[in-house]
Length: 169
Image 1 (tube, rainbow, N blue to C red):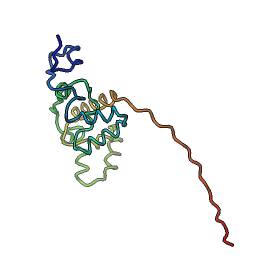
Image 2: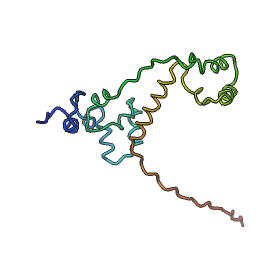
Image 3: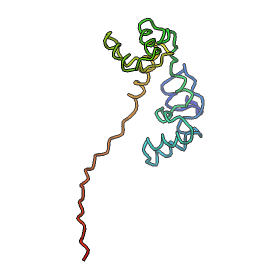
Image 4: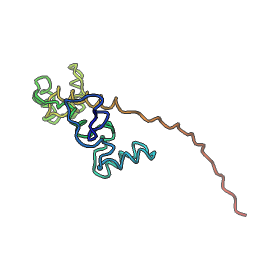
């Protein structure tokens, strides 16, 4: 028997481990306005801009509208940063010390490349561990893969018009 207080999709899947409390995202009073905008035919980008304008998180539109917010946000596993900070990592501490001494970023990246390391590591947060930042990057890539890309509009080639002035007579 289905519970009228819970979304149908969550009950059919049988998710007993996550409590599905609250209305489905599309019926939530805070977000129903934005799902109505989508229903009326506005593009996803415009709806996300409206969310951002109103001080809400635009990534909420990427969630399943048939499930409640709490059930979807509780599903995400928390990644714990338990490694040494990147600046204290023995493999990379030398390069952060070079930056601290005043060497330009380009010189430090060249030194890393010379030593066979990836220079893009210098763009990461030195206060967090390498494993944590890799895990967070993988998590973002997984989220991006689930998004549906909107078809690109064909480029219209515009013709330049040259005007010749009319002589005054």
